[in-house]
Image (cartoon, rainbow, N blue to C red):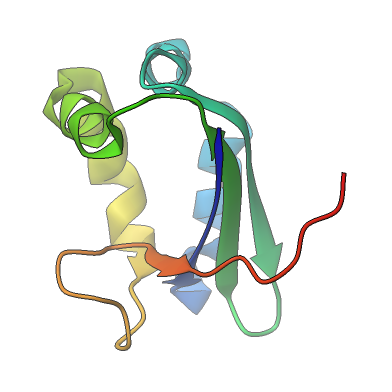
Length: 109
């Protein structure tokens, strides 16, 4: 299992919409997340900076393949089409990232 942490900006005028969307995530999207070996997934909002922080556990063996599977899913693509206009990727993210990956520097069970 690999713990993951990521960060992303949120457009100030889209905060309420993003929160509303995530109050009722589509069942097909949740099923795809699970089928891609993601568990214990949470998204947090930090105001007033409008930052989203996500944390999850990856329980698979090929993260790139699982993320490609998710990206190819039509329902997930529809969901992202609603969410992505709300988001503002960090200018410091790595090439190819939307959510910027973060390094884990501490963990305690």
